[in-house]
Amino acid sequence: MTEGLYVPVDLNSVSDDFTPMPEGMYKMQVEKLEPKASKAGNNMINVTMNVLEPVLYLGRKGFTNLVLVPAAMWKVKQYVKATGIEFTSSGFNLGDSIGKSMMVKVTQEQYTDKDGNLRLRNTFDEYLPEQA
Image 1 (cartoon, helix red, strand yellow):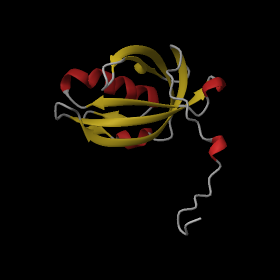
Image 2 (cartoon, helix red, strand yellow):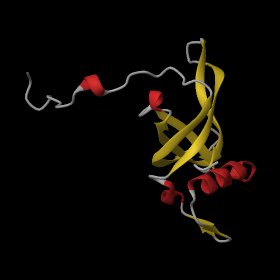
Image 3 (spheres, rainbow, N blue to C red):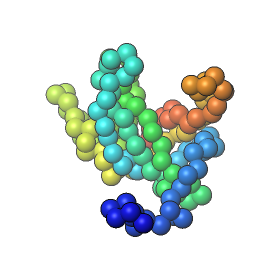
Image 4 (cartoon, rainbow, N blue to C red):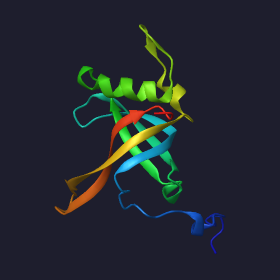
């Protein structure tokens, strides 16, 4: 084996299942946030979450974007309230949501991939506090 290329990871424990999860309510935990620009050039935050429940999907990842434009602030507010982030009239820190869990309504939508094939993917339609 070439020195420096050995990776000490058990790939048997790594999921390579990217099929969409069934529609429903999932308990998810925020893993990370990444500032990005949307295709239209708007500021957005790419959110990566991990499924906590149902256990059948434990560890699966989900991704969504919080677009920081006036027309989408309702969704940002829903996310902030669901994660229990403190907010005031002067603003809030989205970074405080890392590690927080919430309930997420997951749905499926059809899209056309780069090769012109129709495929399904998950979308996050609603964020609710855990006790909801």
